Image (cartoon, rainbow over all chains, first blue to last red; front, side):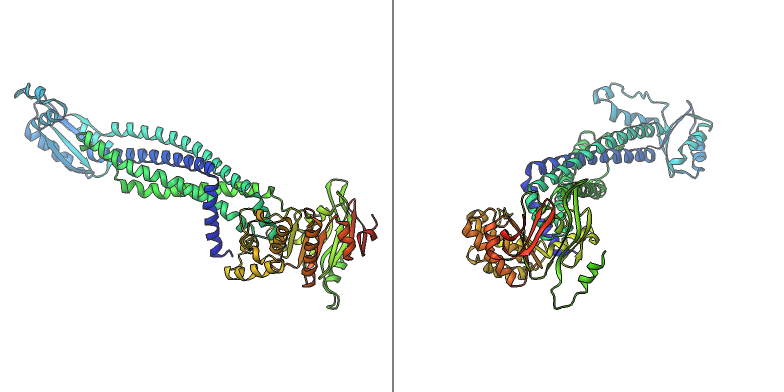
Amino acid sequence: MPKISTFFYGIGQGIKSIFRNRTFSLASIGTMAACLFLFGVFYIMLSNVEYIVKNAETNVGITVFFDEGITDEQIEEIRAQIMTRAEVHTVEYISAEQAWENYKNTKLSPELASSFGDDNPLEDSASFTVYLNDVAMQDSLVRFVKGLPGVRKCNDAAGIADTLSGFNKVITIGSAVIITILLFVAAFLIGMTVSTGVSVRREEISIMKLIGASNFFIKIPFVVEGVLIGIIGAVIPLVIIRLAYIRITNMLAEKFSTMFNMVSFLNVETVMKVLIPASLAIGIGIGFISSRFTLRKQLRKIEVN
Amino acid sequence: MSDKFDLYRAESEEIEPPVILLEEVSKDYVEGQHALKNVSLEIRKGEFVFIVGSSGSGKSTLIKLLLKEISPTKGHIMVAGKELSRLRENSICKLRRSIGIVFQDFRLLKDRTVFDNVAFAQRVLEVPNYKIRRDVPRVLSIVGLSEKLRSYPDELSGGEQQRVALARALVNNPVILLADEPTGNLDPRNSWEIMHLLEEINRRGTTVVVVTHNREIVDAMQKRVITLNKGVIIGDQKGGYSHAKN
């Protein structure tokens, strides 16, 4: 059983080795950082798209437009029919006046809006917005609503959801390919760094073997070196991503505030809760595996005399 | 394993048990070309033995076999009570802890002081610091380097560097001290100093095996001399180099 002091020795020697092989260490840390940065960016994109899709499905709901000349009683009848459905959460009535007011405020400049005077081009655009308890039931509700007398049109959020889901698939495949390639490059570079460390310390390792040092004692500084490179390579992008995410989402929120009535991003803590353990696990895992693999090959080559 | 091995293991206490035992050992690096051929020898605890022979006689192969850096093609080897053929990969380090070794080129770490070079041998075996602080000065005083604790190898003469290497080999109290051409890089005065030290170490109970070309020293010390030629032992007797058939 190795002693605690051996672990401290390994950590000390591992740190020394990183500084001794500065160039290779920096290249390995840089590649690992780039790889995990991209991993972080892709993860953020994917998780936010998923979040937006979910929001779109639950928040946008479906919009029901009525036939021209429909009476208030008929509209109330349609509401009552819709409310009988178990999957319906709420039904919100938007009058033609409200619809025009919203449109003017969000889509038109004040000058253009005022040029319409008292006219309401959306006179027949009164609608219900129906929010659901269960998004999975959206299709059957839409079919039901379309069959009701007095209903002219019924829009659902499936279009938005489908587009975003397709986008998600492309990002997932693209990011998986890029991240895999980068992880291999990072593993290779860590292997090179450890290999250089072994070459630099060839004489010392040879003496260690000669004196009777255990394999664990000989290997631990190099394994620590690989793992430390992995940790540093993970921490750098995590810090950058955290700072950038806050700034970018704040900036987007300021610039596109109208759009953000509908679309909102995951908060930074939610993102980091997944990203921190995942990045550290990848960094440590790649560092550990590549250094162990390299050591197995390199240490065999060193003779004791 | 042959009966002879068992016999040695059960030997009486009157005769010192062998610490190195080779039985019919051959080593072929290329099939049919023997680096060592049917070598049998025993070295008992407390002996001082010279191994001599010209280049290519098999001396280096013998050392590699004793350190289990290579395995024999045929035969059995026992070192410090361990049968090497039965030794697993992760137990080789334990075998080497019972052998102190000194080389012609000293093999010191240039970036560390005399103290640290010797302490290194204990640190890699995870010896506690208080023991290192006790043992290193003790062993450095045996080799006469108490005053050079803080010096670096480059600040020392060849003889002093070899004495540091000796101290490093001795600090963990090995059963066997293996010296491979320990005087090869030294002038006659330093060579004799090292040989006297080896003799002193032997007097304290350590088995000493010296591989050397130095005819003058071998002749003068009148110890057991094993002569190798083309992988075969051609002489094994007490006396000088000149007594050995070569």
